[in-house]
Image (cartoon, rainbow, N blue to C red; front, side):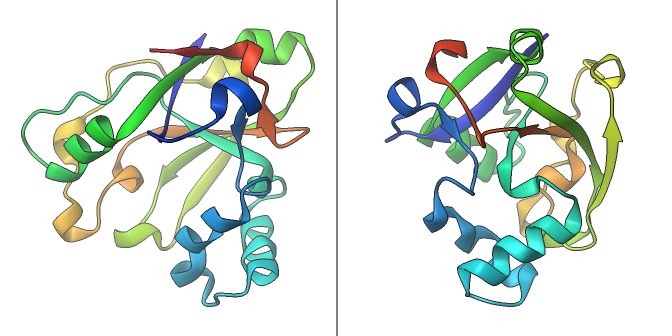
Length: 164
């Protein structure tokens, strides 16, 4: 099963792999507001309270973003990122995956997130509704079905990655 991840344009994924926030402490700032702290250790603790392994997870989609002219932030993500794909089956076969979570939804700006632990067979590859995204109302990935792959070592090694 092919999954997709958007990384910043300037990245070292093909050299170092796709890294979770546990491997890139500077990225923890994304969660500071929701965690209620700027302290990296406290943010990591907050992540782990949402579900065990979240700090070692890589977020992914079942399809590339399909910008439909509805939200400029989606276009910024597409234009300002490098899209990588990987075969989840290969990661599982090589025993790199600990568990998979579906982010079912969240309120505006990512508050009140709801996650569900799932099996690989439960991953839904039907088309995503990119028209629901409205960042002016704080609705981005909270309204788009996506998955968090908890990795035993906190990253996807480069040999599994394909630059799209």
